Length: 347
Image 1 (cartoon, rainbow, N blue to C red):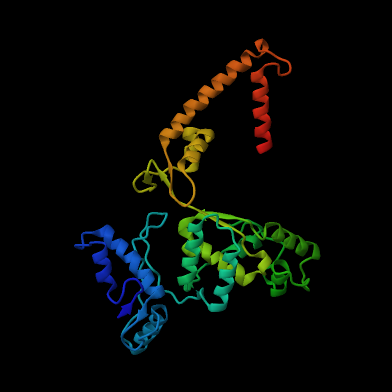
Image 2: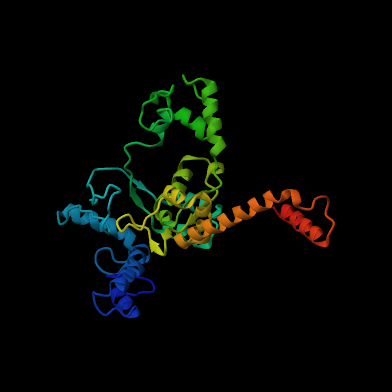
């Protein structure tokens, strides 16, 4: 009932033949087949049967949903794509609530987001491709927050509300927001001009931000939301200028997981290996969009190297009185001085 470019009218049959899937026991291949067809089917697939023949799947899906609900042939039901565990160790379920949705993907808004991305530094082609792909399919997304940035600032920076700001919530009128964030005229407000000016200066100090560093798994949600939300709320000269995305951090070539015990926090690493040895291991772990690998043997080896380095320095300092002094006099002295000068210039 759906034609998908590259997969034709029978995508499941084609991808199973291409991947040589023989049974339901080929779990890894089946997961790859799902990844290849489901998203492309939604973004590029076209209906070839039924009432919505000729429409793209992403257009037909909400129409079919509303039709079935209107006929009483369906009920609303949601579940996670896979098992989701909270940080407290509890299994998560989907709460069916009547809530607002943000319509990411709306034509005019999407054009602004695309323009923002075009002018951004993503530091790698892979990151840019990820954003472009997400902008291609992202649509409605549930908006559900019970607290956030505004409440945090009105509580004078105290997330528990133990301190109260001199600014009252009702004083934050649209005119005040426009003045602080959108270069609007000075508002007629009970907030003092000096405080309003300070708020505006604080915002301009941080915006536009040149770079935000985050994990590659957030490209398909939070980071793309950030692009959309900034273009909706702020003038163009305050739009984001750069996102740099990185892979995940593995520990000894295995995925970090609290449930398996293969887990190490930054604080634990510093206590166990020292901050310097931890830096060595992190520098050796890798960079970019590929997953980095923190190897404990590298950290332990760094401790030995640093210990030897300190011992050598102590020996040199102890023998300082017997070392030759004065200006450079030998060929080796001049070579050394030249190399130091080159290093200083390059730095």
